[in-house]
Image (cartoon, rainbow, N blue to C red; front, side, top):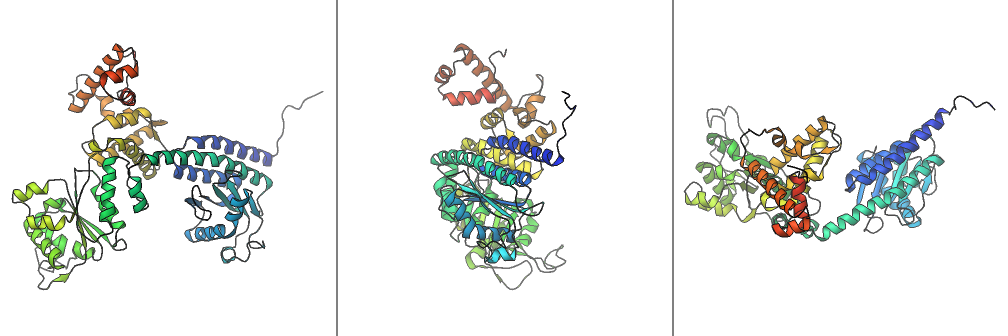
Length: 511
């Protein structure tokens, strides 16, 4: 018997095998996700590509009544088309898929008696549709695929892939939801987040929970707010959140950094100027108060206002009117003032550098924004948030932070607070990508430590780090690297010792 020297496989079958391989390899990779948005985004892109669909949509109903999606994401749809799909799903298809746990399929929705009477189906000329319940017989959501790239209906192979994908995605979703639920049980910020709704403020520490509690009080009121705290703690972002959650959310949010404007121009920037009011006023200038009409005026570095500008601002707050430079008639103002400062205004008042009446007039509500030294438990969450943002901004591959990098970040001092941490993580993401590293390591976040030689002058932080490393190594050696006994001797928790070992890159065989 003579065997053929090579087997010939039709190109169509090779394409099918390639899709099968890509699908199952990528399904395995999806297990590494710890958060739903990236999981859903990559999952949807995967099934759209491997099924040959033109468009795709996923929505999840975990812990919510049927018809009330908790998460959703679409690919290939305009916003108008996506709204139409959601109306179609909520009216017929999703109810059937969730109730039966079976795939709902049609070769042409515009010709199918179940769906052709729907206005959205006719308006968008919806043809081939495949809708699979996510999670098998006990679905937690649905996968919706619309339009086949090759024309005609979805094939039996497409249906089988979609079913396998949707069944596999269910446990991944359930695992992330369960982990999030457990974390929520220990999250002191959760009650306030429920009141505030979706808000892009990261943190779970008790110190940050107190900030969100204050935001809950301040946001719905139309009163002045004074934000205090060290530089770089996110006061601008917090002011924006208060505006976005308040009664003036549909009107402008206008910022002015009082320290960045020369004293001679602060009044002009705030209140505007008529032609000829000063040497550079060659045309009429609209000030920030007018630009923020109906909305919020955020005054950063508030303590740097000149005495003259302080007087005019007090007049505005008392009377609701102001005079542009060179104007003879007042103008009406309708703004909410949110001010921020990193210097103690009480001391400035005592020193005669800031008006006491303006200080009390602005701080109807005062919110103290903590620095990172008071919310260290938020550092890993913030680092991961900044890492994801940097990867999106620079279109980098998705990078994670190694346990050692997270531990080093948590143990380090961040005198520049959020701003310093964000810049350090962004730089680390860029350097890690340039090395084709799989994840961000401590050397990427703290390159100065790796670059510093033995003869280089030590900063206070590096000197303390070297002392901690030596001392911890000695304690571990004395306890034969028994972490429980070492933790007891140091009077810290065992988990803290593990974090220190990772952050300080300690090994038993180190000299």
